[in-house]
Amino acid sequence: MSVDSRLGGRPGEAPIAASIAADLLAWYDVHARALPWRAPPGTPPPDPYRVWLSEVMLQQTTVAAVKPYFRAFLDRWPTVEALAAAEDADLMAAWAGLGYYARARNLLACARAVARDHGGRFPDTEAGLRALPGLGAYTAAAVAAIAFGRRAVVVDANVERVVARLFAIAEPLPAARPAIRAAADRITPEARAGDFAQAMMDLGSGICTTRNPACAICPLRPNCAAAATADPARFPVKAAKKPKPVRHGTAFWLEHNGAVLLVRRQPKGMLGGMRALPTGPWADTPPALADAPAEADWRPAGRLTHVFTHFALELEVVVASGSSAVDGEWWPIDRIADAGLPTLFARAAALAMAA
DNA sequence: TAAGCGTGGTG
DNA sequence: TCACCAAGCTT
Image (tube, helix red, strand yellow):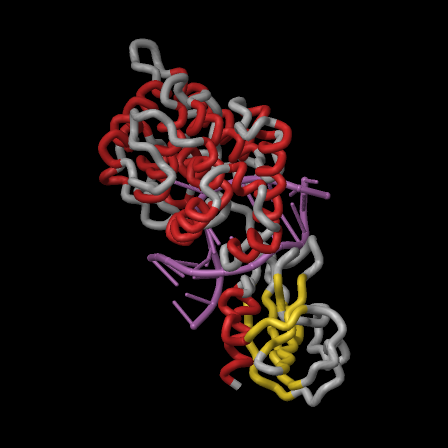
């Protein structure tokens, strides 16, 4: 049966779309997760700043990973105006470890745009939000719905999974996205759109999980096409992914008077804008010491493998003493934890200090 | 449009 | 163990 025919229902049946929304919201009223950035179901929405901050942090990032960062950011920068006034280096260091550092650069750009162009208040429409840096289709819809109560079609990976299963959409991702979005639109209610969006995400996170979905306790089971099949977890169907290449690089740990030489990576690209150890370019073959920041007696301290989204890096860590470097800043080694190093370089630093 | 972009949790 | 993947955005 097609998505449209199921959503339309047969003569004499309750419309399935309305039933799905009602069943989901009733479930959410009882089972909503309590999260630091969330208002309980049916209560006034939280500060748009909190909603926006949490949504950006949650992009491709788990709730568990976000929680401590969200608390730290809110503690240090309680308002969007405060965040807009932050120094770039302070914000990038505070984001260190969370990944996808373009988010941090866009976060600051967005805060400054809201402060400068919108009087410190977030736009209250999906289109207005969508025009801000770092807010794509998902985040603009989520903030519009959750913070401002607007009806918006909020589609993240959870919603894609739930919807693909509800309607047993067999077309593989990403080609199935338009159909999934259309189906999500059909089941999104006019009222409580924010609760509906968060309910879909809670359901996807806790019940309609990627592997081993808990169909037996799912409030949407009566209306789920996939649950009626032998293998609900096969939805959504995904295209095969490409193999991950291995790249090689060298990180240089140069010590002088209890300090280590750190550099600021270029604004864009991998780990862009972050404080880092000096490295040469990352290549397909193991490199030499040609890109060292100084002439010195470089000694091997170890190697590590760090897996990124689209390649794996084998990083050789070498150490030396000397003060002849021209670029960079000398950072006290006993305060290296405060340097805001991304995880790759935090791991490299640990290797160097253990050598 | 497809590729580039981090990290930590999980089964 | 390790392959998969998470409240995506940008170019």
